[in-house]
Every structure is written in structure tokens, then in C-alpha cells.
Length: 363
Image (tube, rainbow, N blue to C red; front, side):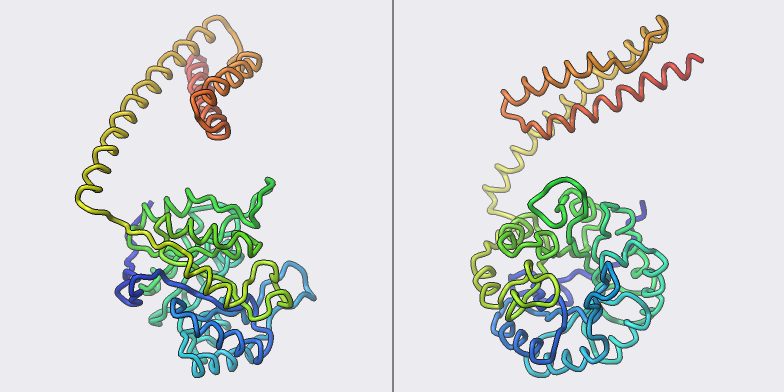
């Protein structure tokens, strides 16, 4: 996978003064009064640098409130003049881009529903060719890292250098306290592939409920994410969209003041001790890989033996016994049951593949 996007580090164009990037504002622009009242209160929060608002709202069904459109830009201009806050909106097509540039919007973002469509993303990226404006790209609704990277690459390919990724969680069908599953491993991998790419978190869309926002915001900072976007409304209970996940500016201020900003590096003694522990992990990982390799050698021998004796590969009774036994042993050793089950399933999948390959080669 290509990792050659040219990205300007966040701190070089948006100095944070020790605090991560904070973006706040209502889910939807509803009225001039709502925008100005919310902005006045947000402007009293020193950590907030950008005011966000949804001018257009992609809705699942027609007839729902789909945003106020162009007149909302005039409200944003008043917000900027009144408070000095920079402004950011979502754009979903080239016409949106044209209007955003016309009205002096400071930063754009691409929504999760748009990111799933490479044609739409390319049209927006092409409309920004040779335009010097920061662009934020949300992850797609489904957990597809390549699709997310592809959208980022399309903007990089048209000359955008101030790029930010937004982690807003992923839709899935299991029961969860969250609106969208965090699946932190996906933004972790994105940061590994693109170390200079800023990644901020959208706790509002991950949580779906305001009472969970502080927990996820703190976790985002603890995991070295570069900022948070929080939906904020002066009267969230009566918001026209996503009322349950928005908070009052006063509550946002309290939350931001409670968040702990941890150092990314420690003292010399701390780093030395950390390196000692990491060396121990490296040693254990080496031993673990050797054991896995030996296990696969035994699997191959079993595959050869089954093949010679015309025995089926998958034997469910044996597999059920393995799961029960290993989960019992592992949980007694203090290991997480869900983690163990996933690990055993992954090993079993590879074992079946290797045995299948052996039988296929014998034919």
C-alpha cells in the first residue's frame, strides 16, 4: 500500500499551545438566532478553535430536515465576525465546495456517507484542485481502511496538503453502548501507515449519547489522537437533528477542563524503564512466534496424515472441545474470553487453510 502522501503536520499550520484541536458547534444550522447564541457561548471556551455546523444534512429518507442550504453561510459569516472563531462545514459535491469557497469557509470536511463513494470523493477533490484549504476526511460508515485511505489520497493527489482524518466510528450490527463502534485498531493502523497524518476523533457520532462523550474523549487523547469534534448546541434537547448526542457549551467547557492531557514522552528514567519492558515484550513475541510456527508444523503433519487416510479436514466435535478447554485455561490465567475466542478462531482458520492446501496439492 502506498504511503507517500505529502502532509503538512498539524502543529506547523495550526499551533495548539499545548491543547489538541477542538472543534465544536451544532449538528445542524437551524436559524440565525440558534447559530449566534451557540457561537457566543462557544467563543467563551478558550480551547475551541473552530465552529462547525451542518449546512446540508444527508438524510436516510426524504422529507426529513436536510439543512438550510446557502442562507446558512450568511449566519456563519456573522459567527466568524462576531466571535473570531474559524468555520468548518461538510461538503458532499462540487456545488457545495463552490459555495463554501465563495463565503470564506476556513476548513471543509467530507462525511462518512460521501467517503463510501469514490466517484463523489473524486469530484469534490477535483473541485479543490490548486485550492489552499484544509480538508478533513471522515472514515467511511463501514470498517474499510483502504476506502478511507483512498479518499485521503484523492485530496492529496489534487494538491491538498493540510489534511486531517476524522475517526467517527463504524456501523455494525452487534449490540453496543455506542452508536458507532470505535474499532480503535483501524485509526491506529492509519496512523502507523501515515505518521504525519493528524487524526481527530468525533465522539458525538461514536457515542450517540451525551453521557458517554467524556469517556470517549479522554480515551481519544490517551491514545494520542490529535483532537476532538464535539456537537454543541445552546439548547440540545430541542435540536432538530441528533439531539441526544449534543451538549451545551457550558457542559463542553466543564468536560474539556476535566480532560487529562498526558505527555507523549517521559523523563530519561521513564524512557529507560519503558525500553526495558518493551525489550521483554520483544523477547516474548519472538518465543510466541516460534511456538506458533511449531504448532503449524504439527498442523501440516496432521493434514498429511488425514490426506493419506482420506479423513475430512473439519471435525466439529474436536474443535468444540478445543474451544471449551482453551477458554477455560486462558480465563483462569487472567486472559479476556472474547480476545481468546478471536485468537483461537484466527488460528483455526489458518489451520484449516493449511490442511486444505495440502489436500489440494495431493490431487
